[in-house]
Image (cartoon, rainbow, N blue to C red; front, side, top):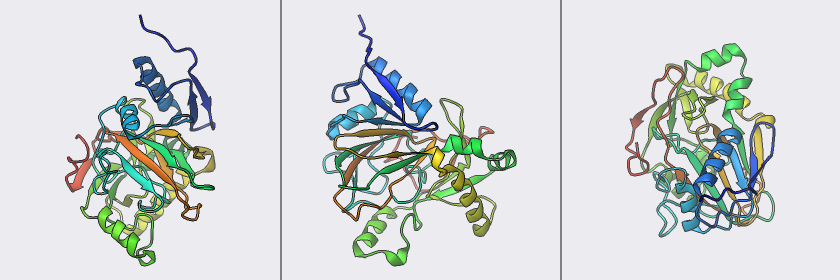
Amino acid sequence: MTTIATDRAVRRLTAHIGAEISGIDLTQPLAGSDVEFINAALLEHKALVFRDAPLDDAGQQQFAESFGQLTTAHPTVPSVDGAPNVLPVDSEGGMPANRWHTDVTFVVNPPKASTLVSHVVAPYGGETLIANTAAAYRDLPEPLRAFAETLWAVHTNDHDYAVIPEDLDEQAKLRREIFTSTTFESLHPVVRVHPETCEKGLFLGGFATRLKGLTTSDSRDLIRIFQSYITRPENIVRVTWQPGQLVLFDNRITQHYAPDNYNREPRRLHRVTVAGDVPKSVSGESSTSLIGDASHYTVA
């Protein structure tokens, strides 16, 4: 006989994105009904916060694996020692993420979902901002929506993603060399259709460098316009980290940003990602890989 949980709860955090989930013990293997409950909440709210989730790496991987096959930690950046699926997001050694992005869109099939678990929390600042790209698409005036649906963007890891090259110190230069040690480039639709909900969302972010068939200047201007709708305050939830907290977000229909507002105080999160599908456009065309083989990172 299956036990049905009755103490599970969803508390909305903003009108457009984000919810806090309670009543599920993440330190234990999830029951099938819990997985269905969490996945339904994720599809509706795009980003979920679990306040009491003191998970080690094994526990985080077990949780993430409930939602699909895992990727390795990253296509180029080393994993946590002994945990090939876990990426350290560290104020000391990690790549800066203070630019809006969707995880690993430079490969042809970016992750379905990302999980972050807090291990060291900064005494102030260090939040994570997550934006709903479906709400941004809906906010566009109709002519812009129609235009966006015709556009394709080139995403690559080989550019000044978050820091001006001239501003890099020696340690940051080394991190950048690692990050770009293998070049990846993929062509994705600017408007992606979500494979489960069929929602349309803007699929851009910091790895999108230019639009197919347009000049660099025109691409930059158009991407800036579309991004301005994604980053409207009403489309964003701001997650304040507490020790032993887990955040799960749908990487197919969100962007996120980690503001550098904690003076490099100690801060360490661990990220585990779930392998995703190849994005499709409104017309049903699939993304394509232009440069790089990411088969070591994620299943195609």
